[in-house]
Length: 118
Image (cartoon, rainbow, N blue to C red; front, side):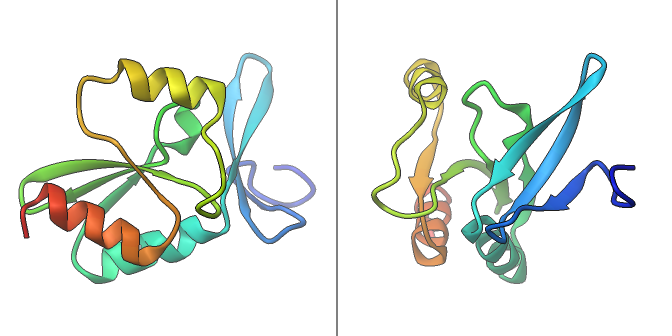
């Protein structure tokens, strides 16, 4: 517990969610872009499974979406102008599978449906 709150979820001052993962003795916090909550909520409303990956770090995309027997990796950025971090650039470049960068609900739905050929 940190200040009476679970170490897993703490609201950041800008309204985004911060999650913690134990690393060694301390806790490492990964900031979640504020639009991620909205995107995940809508994908789930449409019947898609969503697994959060943002706490993995090291450039790994934010979420894994399962839909119609396919898996889709999505990197969520706060807006279209936001750039990938150096770790994300390296991860995306070395990954031999699909990964898509999105910044809003419409683009996320489009990316999943495109991969799932819907």
